[in-house]
Image (tube, rainbow, N blue to C red; front, side, top):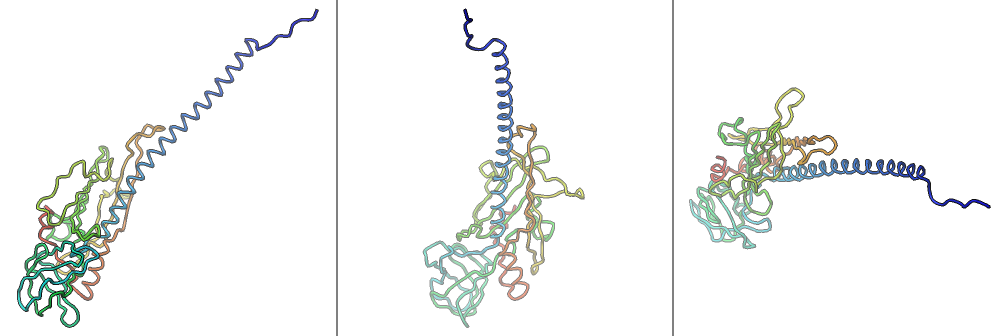
Length: 318
């Protein structure tokens, strides 16, 4: 009589199989946990890179636009609304596309064409109306342009010319002009805060150059968060958020290069190290092209290309 064949696994075989299964499962789970930590690290750094890149790209664009002068929208032809006589007379301007025209005292305007062309400096001005001393008579419809740029489009730091006690600083960048290229003249302040230990913010505060008061800096104006003080350089010197290359321009000064250095940390701690990750981004030579152009032309051919700072902007520097 033959014995019956046993089916299934013995207890020992089952226990061995479970041990192998648990070992494989542990390896897989460990890999998944490590993968999740790596993904967290990458996500942290990606968010930080994206935020810094967006802020520095905007800074680079607006520094490059600083100092641009516009009378109206970019597509408009600005002309005299009525004929003007010789002497100190009032005038009004009209934009061909119906957009608003803005002039201000001490602005230099180029009026008319050919032999009748002249540059006049406004003794008064507001909106589309002004007063100036004309050497020539001009017919209605004569073209009018504001050539050149604001030599102080990047407001020089207080340490350079004594005439700008409220100028840009190592932590506050002040600039103005047709920053957005839409014909609207605005004043912008970038304020960098934060210490080596306590994170701060990079704020962007924008207003019209004719604003009567400066809006308060609050959380609605945060451009970049988790900003830290920059590490010292190799010689132990403090590295500011903003540094300026200043050049003489007539009796005043202008900024021809801005260096921007920002240090930020991630919003969340690195899952692998338990520490905040940090990055320093530097834009070493950002040139305000309008200011540089007027600096070159003013020192070589045409000093009238350097437009004066509007009194309303001077008031906003406080």
